Length: 368
Image (cartoon, rainbow, N blue to C red; front, side, top):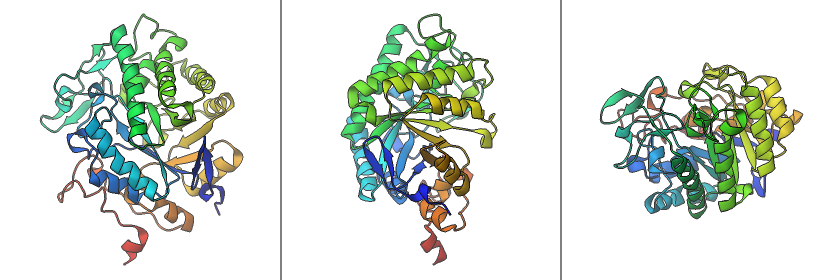
């Protein structure tokens, strides 16, 4: 019977009500890119998690690659997020906003006037992206970021971090995974720059480290975490580069020096990517002394084992939270988990945007 998973946990200066993290998941319900009452209810329903990490949220208009994802770069968005953080805090949970700049995984049809699709290099990602106006279209070819663009993007992340604190968030997570801008800098497949941000491991890691340093300067290290997906295959990034292990272990050492509050390490093997080798996880664990969050198809038994062994400090659950707003209770009691409807992950059902979002009942309601 799991004990540690459901006991109080520490995250920097924060006390969490348990060791369960709700992982970030794009849900595409932010109409006009502004968080709304429905989004506040969605997170409040799931606030028995010790820590909630929001869906990917754009730090600037250029980061709005997907349809209907939220931003946190203007006053109206900050006001919208205040409803979310208040609702979650009222239930006793803590909440970090995930800052996600989509980079080349983007299309102008999903972006406001004046925004651009930018990336480390002018290399389009294979595959398509949904737009509400044009349907499914190929990913756009990005404009290669100039040195000035890179510095501007770093400052956009820092300003978004300040906006997050104003909105009531307990901290931010820099999205360095899943094939988006930060990982596009990390990957030699999408980053073919010849300046100080391209080439060897140390240069490709520079962007995320500069972003983390700027965010720390803005809001403090105890409020900054980073999500990484070594060997992830999302966003048309090759997972088999020879230096992948060395890159992520180097990053762990440098993030330790910066003092970020956590590294959130995700293994996407359940969704078809190569598994993260145990030697890579162990090396990151050895290099980084802060909180390590592990994510990737966990059940209660495996979560408890990794917490007890010290392999992880917190365990993140993703898709089970979609159909189980009371996931923590269901895990704790061994109750059967409800199944999600994948067709409503990013789009409304026949009954509208609430369907498949805030209409999944808690166990007690389902039994009635």
